[in-house]
Each structure stands twice: as structure tokens, then as C-alpha cells.
Image (cartoon, rainbow, N blue to C red; front, side, top):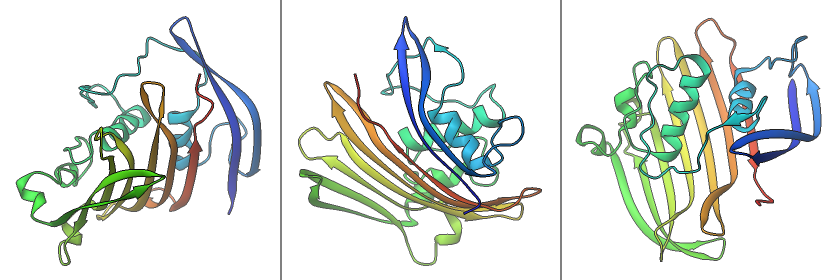
Length: 222
């Protein structure tokens, strides 16, 4: 490993604004440049999702019914919005992804036939769950982006308990292979993430290949 970061941070919400306090941070390697900017795109994306530089105001915590859009966004902000689409609306078409926008729409007729889909029942962290799995059929792997997606649903409320994603694609100007894991928990009436894990290997034209990962553990909700 050439660079790493282990940190504990606290998000503080007050007067409809959110700020962050760094409780502990340990850095190895060249994670930062001389201006304390991240040297790696994987770290930039992680920080943009989980870290707060200044106060962020006017947010809400409602995801249901929200239409995510990349309109008017560029660079990191556009990439963050695309990642939110993947997290909260899996199986939907994601605009702005070169060559692959339509390949994320795994429930549309054009893509659904490329998958085997199954439903099972099992336990997940002491919770009875329905397990819905979509896995690309042999011979169709080069035509899809989502290789496999497994979702655990609470068998009483149908809330998402956890979801695993495996994605990959190879084009002329970039390639990637990514695995993501999300585990949810209940805090009062809210369904919130307790763990988000990412492992990725990607290469874009004019950039060095990056192999990296990160784990965000969210706890002590108040």
C-alpha cells in the first residue's frame, strides 16, 4: 500500500447546517500533496461523500421520491450525483456515463434478458430477509456494467437491510472493476447506513491506474 488514512470524525448539525469535527486522523504515504489536497481520485471521492470542509446548510434527510439529476453539475459533483443514483436507485439509467448510461438500467427489457434473477429467504444479522439476486448470464458479461447485485429486504417491512454490488466494464479509454457493500440499520424511525465498503480497480486515459478501497462505519447517531 502506498498511501492510507484512518480517521474518526463527528458530524454536527445545528441551525439547519452541518459541520465536521476531526477527532483522530492517521496518514501513511503520500495521501496528501503539499497543499493538503488528496493525491488520489479514490480518496477525493470518499472525502467528498463523508467529510465536510465548511458548513453545509439547507439539507434534508429524505431520499424517498427524490429525483437525482446531473444537470448543471460537472467534475466531482457530477460523479457524486451519479454514485447517489447507483446507491438509491439501483437499476435505473444513469446519465452522463460515457458508453454505459443505458447499461445500468438492468430492469429495462433490453438489459433484463441478460440476467438471471432469483428470490430466496434467509437470515441477515438476526433478521429474516427476502434475498433478491440479479446475476449476469454467461456470455452476456461484456454487455453489462452491473455484474451482480444482491439485496436483503426485511421480510415484514420490505425495507432494505443490505445490498452488495459488483460492477465492471472495459472500454477503449477506461476500465474499472468495483465491489461495494452497504449495510443499513434503524435509528428510531429512520433507516440509516451503518457500513459502506468499497474496493475498486480503475484506469482512465491520461491517469495512472488506481487500486484502492475504503470503509465507512457510521455510529453514535443522536
